[in-house]
Length: 106
Image: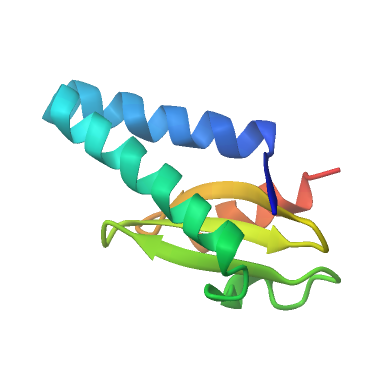
């Protein structure tokens, strides 16, 4: 399966990585990015591994999520031949923000 990152998902990943760099250092940043990329590769092999995202259940497309590092989760859609990563989401944030970001997708 191909892996597609939306621009917003890529921005969110980089924002979190930058925050980790400033507050926890290079090694923590590298570990975070490694975990994100390894998780997305795993999801490409097993696209239905993530659970249906409860905050996005009312959408016409099915969004799934998979928690990484106890704080963040990868939010994605599994399509015929690809995984579309739509967000890297900090679980401590207001869920309404996640819903708004998905609503803004083309």
